[in-house]
Structures are given as structure tokens and as C-alpha cells.
Length: 239
Image (cartoon, rainbow, N blue to C red):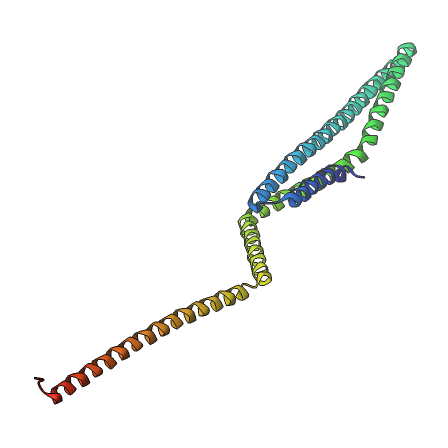
């Protein structure tokens, strides 16, 4: 596993775990998205810290490489100087001192070779780390772009989530009404009202019939009284 996969992969897994946990317990869509933005922002901060550390290590390695190359050049200069001194002494016949400076040149050349090897050994690692850093930077830029997109889509996502929630509640209410079927209850109440109306109409009809009978009796009595009066008139006064 590469360092890029280790850093961004671990952060990505943590972020997905947080998102899944929030989705499982989500109640308020706005709070859920706001928390998602906060968690993703924290993941980016963590990624930035890890990438900064990786870049710092790379820069130290580059500095060490430069120092090794500089040291190799310095020891090469010293070896050349010692060798030149030895040649001059040997030309003058001082072979003892000439050998001494040749030995110093050999020591300097050994140091030069050692630093050159250290620099050479470090070059593949430095090249690889440079590639890793560039990929990490690209990955981090992608995370920031996703965060920016999420922030821009936040209001739309919240509105859509609330709309879906409202539609779900309406659908539940419609389903509940369909299951209860209130029309049967209304029909029963309507039948009760009709029976009450019929009862009241019957009472009115009964009262009307009784009143008509009373007027008929009154009219009959009046007719009998008139007949009696006329009969008395026919008979005339009685002595």
C-alpha cells in the first residue's frame, strides 16, 4: 500500500463511516448535512496535516541529499589539493611527505565516494516521494472541491429532503384514511339524521291532524246551535 493510499484511504474510510452512521440516525436533514460538512472539513484538516508532514519529510530528505552532494564535492576538492601537493613534493624529491599527501588524497576520495553513494541511494526514494506528494496534493484538492460542491448543494439537498419527508407524511395520511374508509361513518350519520327528520315530520303531521279534528268539532257544534235557534224561532213565543 502506498503512502498516498494510507493517508487518504484511511481518512476516506473514516469519513464514509461517519456519513453512514449519520444516515442511519438521520432525523433532521439540515442538521445531518451540516454535521456532514463539519466532519468532511475535519477530515480535510487531518489530511492537510498528514500531507504537510509527508512534504516536510521529503524536504528534509532533499536537504540531506543536497548536503551529501556538497560534501562529496568538498572532499573531491580536498582530494585534488592533497594529490597536487603530493605531486609537487615528489617533484622536489620529498617522497616521504609526498606519500603522506597521497594518503590524505585517498582518504578524501573515500569520503567523496561515501557521500556520493549516500546521495545516489537517496535519489529513488526522493523521486518516489515527490510523486506521492503530487498525488496527495491532487487528492486533497479533490476533497476540497467536493466540500465546496456539498456546501453549494446544501440548501437544495435540505429542501429536497424536507419535501420528500412531507410527501411521505401526506402519503401515510392518505393510506391511513383509505384504511379507515370514513364514508361508512358518514352514511350511518346521514341515516340517523333522516330518521330524526322523519320522526319530527310525523309529530307535525300528528299535531296537525288533532287540530283539524278540534276545528271540525267546533264547526259541528256551531251548526247544531244554529239549527236549535232556528227551530225555536219557528215555534214562536210560548204562552
